[in-house]
Image 1 (cartoon, rainbow, N blue to C red):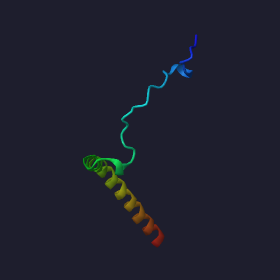
Image 2 (cartoon, rainbow, N blue to C red):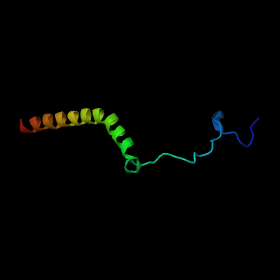
Image 3 (cartoon, rainbow, N blue to C red):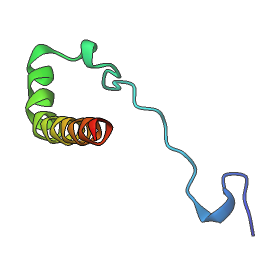
Image 4 (tube, rainbow, N blue to C red):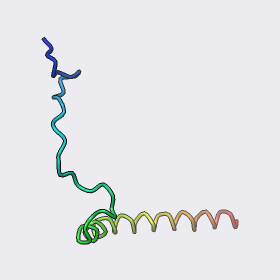
Length: 65
């Protein structure tokens, strides 16, 4: 027994869009939020950078051999 508002799979209909949506770009964030984001993501970025450097070093050693 389907009604006009029903969607396949029993998912509820989408709600209204929020009127005060957060900014989508990093540059649009306030300075305090930018700093907080950098503090949150810095450890993961540094780990990824270290892994990349290790791979590059290993690749250079393979090339040299």
